[in-house]
Image 1 (cartoon, rainbow, N blue to C red):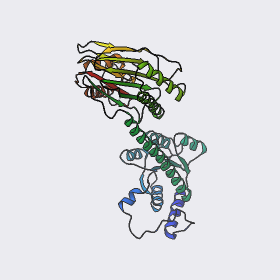
Image 2: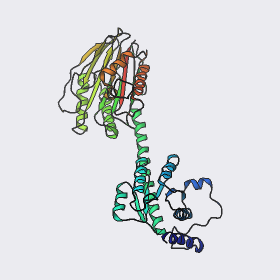
Image 3: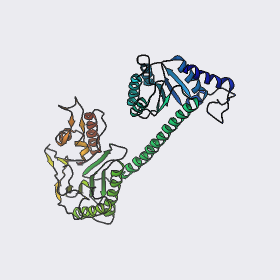
Image 4: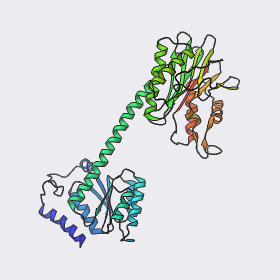
Amino acid sequence: MRVNLAMQEISDTVVQRLDVGGSALTPTPSTKPSSAAELRKRPRILVVDDQLDILTALELLLKMNGFRADSVDSPQRALAATEGQSFDLVLMDLNYTRDTTSGQEGLALLTELRRRFDKLPIVVMTAWGNVELAVEAMRLGASDFVQKPWDNSRLLQTLNKELDRAAAARRVVDSAKSELDIARHVQQKLFPQKLKPMATLDYAGRCVPARAVGGDYFDFFDLGEGRLAGVLADVSGKGVGAAMLMANLQASFRSQIEIGTREPADLLTAVNRLFYEATPPEQYVTLFYFDYDETARTMRFVNCGHPSPVLIRASGEADRLTASSTVVGLFPRWDCATGSATLASGDRLFAFTDGATDCTVAAGQHAEPGELGEDGLVELLLASKSSTAQAAVEEIQAELARLGGGQDLVDDQTLIALVGR
């Protein structure tokens, strides 16, 4: 009887073509068939019910009001339909042939659809609805709840409301994605774009962010004839916040270089003061800074709480350039100790952020899955056969990606290489 009432209501709409104050019940007349492009723009709805007359009634109602409608008569066929096709909304019954009263079949379908499509609007229907079932359906992820026999106008209002809500959510996501794309482009421009040629030194760096933008930073500075400085830093935190702090750090370094601060201790003392004054008290930076003089082939360096760079001699012997001061930006009063090393022809220096050592090794690539660690990374560095700094950076990062088995990065991954000529 309820199904017949629903069918009769639609039939009346078709035959009498009622005009209910601009209601979506009255289809818009058209003088020519819709093009394929126009049809594709219409919202596509999957209708799930095990009663043929209800499916027919709903399909007719939806198509009359500007929707594309596909119908299936079981939860199994609903799941199969969503595997290869895209829908804007699912309108589904909660009660099926195997269980016509409890709604458990429908709730199981709802749960699986929500697992597969976390943003897909799902409107549920049932002829045996009650408050408890409605609450459970909403708890499991239903967007709204409609009870049979339905009112055409209210059903269409519900569907349009959920489609509008989903469209608004997509616009927010698209806008955020667009802004992140712009931020990523801007941040990439903050990294060195042109490297100064050096007679006795080949050098390169590369950052692979874990997200659209990140908090890792590397830079190289021309200090005049035969001299080069460089920095590799890791700002605490991730994402947009860390990227903003990274830009602040870059500005601090470049401003101090521009005004002529050259001694490593003086430079870093000034950078610490600027960063401390401009950032929240809990933010800090670990960094490795070096100052290379190719006349003497000597490198002065300061390691501020950063993972120890690896200096691999041409003979194959490896040294670690351990921390010589605490992190930057955490304390207003700060000082540092400067170390030194020579960089002869064939020597290679690798500095890296902890995103490289924290690289997750996938099962089957290592004795046990887990973090690569500093020892594992040193093994990769020692095994590197690349003769140029750029090739070495790319080789190591490609090997890290291979070991990760295609998994997403847990942290930004940045590496710089210095190769003595």
